[in-house]
Length: 345
Ligand code: ADP
Figure 1: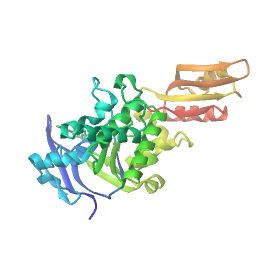
Figure 2 (figure 1 turned 180 degrees about the horizontal axis):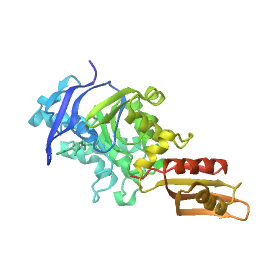
Figure 3 (figure 1 turned 120 degrees about the vertical axis):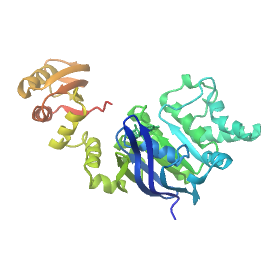
Figure 4 (figure 1 turned 60 degrees about the vertical axis):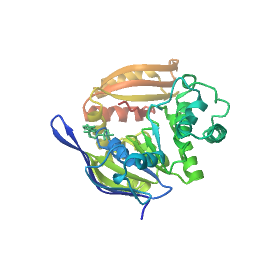
């Protein structure tokens, strides 16, 4: 038997326009010690699935079995006990602003009634584990986003949970901090053999740390597999879109990915252009507009230049048909200007 088993789980809500199947006949198994990712666009049913796993919602039908225990049947004190075994990490950290790092971390232990000495010793251990030594007495407002999330992770681990559920845990962080927090989750997973389930709409989060992934669309799991296999040969259209989105910065944009970008960002695709010295900015920008017919707005630019050469990056917003945007990509390539698509929700 697997550590987490969902069998034909359904969760319906009464919406304004009738019944909504937030989770629709989902069956999944997750092994002990696994890092399992659930990816899907907004509204796919990810949060509902997480709430079913931590006992905050009861399924309309189906089974949720965790550590051989039927979670659906739990009530009262038993449900509360179960919920202590599930650590939660949130996108916006959910810290108490009037409490220090140490006080935030010991809070669940205080609520448990753990003796002061014991909980302080545990807090010291956790602070060490998440790399916050020296910041114990700081308040959340004095911390960077990455440090706040470290506090969130330490607090989630305070009760020595069996599962860590991460709900868009890195979505509010910049790329470098995201990598650091993912690295920390990976370390915790290895050191404690802790099962981690994370939900995200960002495929690079999945690629970096997950062992397996489930792709959700309209309440259903449409594809599950080893991360490498899913990246290598995505089967479903929605998975292909996620994989494409992730591969775009390093790879040639395909017609399909440009089509996808235009549809996703009808107000304009934001690109970061990187000038490395061989080109001069002005002609590149004016010529790309002239030659490809795209509509291009410069949003931000810190380019150093002389008549012949430019260095630095700039952000531009590009609108146009699929052919025009594809031609712009091709032109930038020809001019040896680096292009990266910036994600904006
Ligand atoms: P995701 O986390 O992937 O964005 P959610 O699980 O939040 O998706 O939502 C899935 C669907 O269920 C959406 O259509 C959402 O509007 C609906 N939904 C979620 N929770 C409720 C609720 N409490 N009442 C009514 N509809 C809900």
